[in-house]
Length: 165
Image 1 (cartoon, one colour):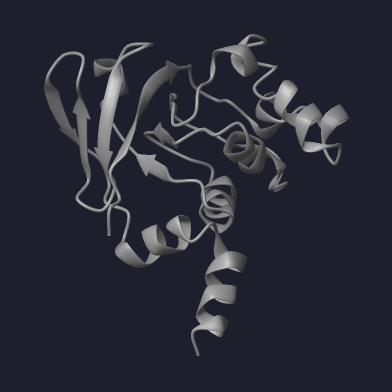
Image 2 (cartoon, rainbow, N blue to C red):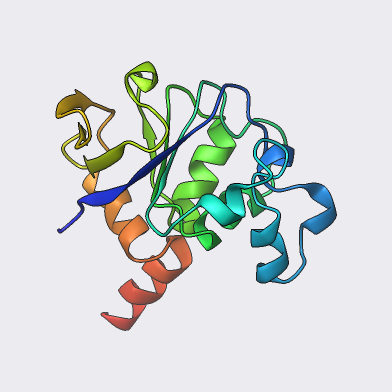
């Protein structure tokens, strides 16, 4: 399936809610504006730091707060490769999968540092820190959910299935 993910760690703390990820004054505005304010409540320099494929590694309770899908969407639009956390708010987790953003339950966040280079196999549940040559496990993302993510989210996945039938 070719599900290996590569990127750099952008590390944050615990209890990052949806308002910190996607500030309310910018919700519903043009993509360029929302991306320019992504993670503003936690890291005002995030839009300048994030590179395509980078991983957000955060403490527990990531994505708590509102049920708006704008929070995972702004991360996907910022080209974040995946979010790793020991605990996600349930609705954020499902919204992320539904829009095509991999979210991985990962307990070893203390073993990763800002800037570490990672290679992740979400289906096998393997996280390799290429900077330190350490290997960890994360909760496996089932193949059907990974296919949904690779297709670009739930809507794109359904459109693909309809086109193939």
